[in-house]
View (cartoon, one colour):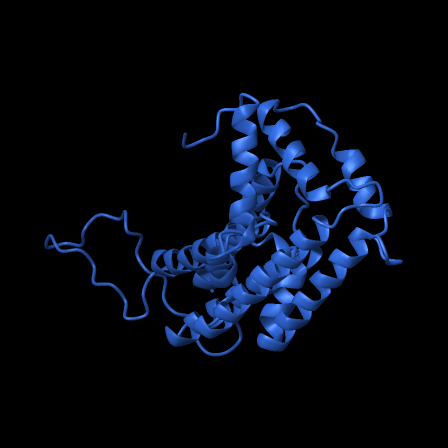
Length: 278
């Protein structure tokens, strides 16, 4: 009975520690990043339920009784008690001591805690590198290869859409490069993103009845549909909850974004910006 009470206390304390750890991490997240969705919290609850089952299995495997079902195990001497007469320490019981069970419970909670906190950190990043993206979703090599092809093709289409001149002859892709470069040269100062986004959202592609934003969203929809076909249900649902824009996956081989980033960096240098790595 005492073993069960002690293990239960250890589990409760560890649960509180996990909750504090999660809250501390949320406070560290930048304000412009959305907190974990409610399904993340539900996952925490499921993990605690799993831990409780693990504890019951552990106790059953060590022969610990359940109140009201057979005799309770004898109380074991504390590890701090003096040695028994004759200079030898008391032999441990085959069932193990309270401290051993607590250590196993604490270890299990620590491992589960780390897993949850790591997931929250990873999924606070909405523009992940392909290595992180594929690893988190546990994609096979074949699935990752197909995913990379979908991402590269989707990014190329977005670049083509933004590179289509507007009714007044402006090039939204060129404007994007200029705004991003000015943002790097003058950090903290808005170079005019609001006006640019407004044009993307409202202006129609010449010769069509479709805005630039609507055409881009069509591309993203096709990308998501390709993911859904290529992956199993679990990773697709996970990435939907993650909230990653499929065109924003980074560090993909042959991505057109590489050339775009170089254009932005080159323009930023001419504006006096210091580029990391120069």
